[in-house]
Amino acid sequence: MSLSTHVLNAATGKPAADLAVRLETADGRVLADGRTDADGRIKDLPAPDPGSYRLVFDTGELSPFYPSVTIAFTVTDAAEHYHVPLLLSPYSFSTYRGS
Image (tube, rainbow, N blue to C red):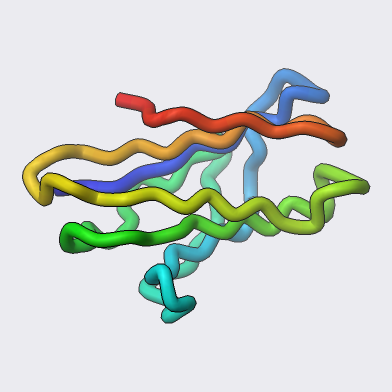
């Protein structure tokens, strides 16, 4: 199993570089933290076991409305790759399970 994320700034049409991101367990224990690279990606997050997790994105510099965005997700198969992208604009965001 592997885990990655990608953040795109919809207001500029560019990757959100140097954005702080935390991987937490469902009860808030921090498993990892990092910053997105120049392409808005973090490719090497730790591979969690099956269970519930959340990615917390520090979006305050990109959005006057959302100081942070939290995406909760469930790992069901430890053999799969999980990619959790975030598309962010100043007053909205969306996500999906990527490939």
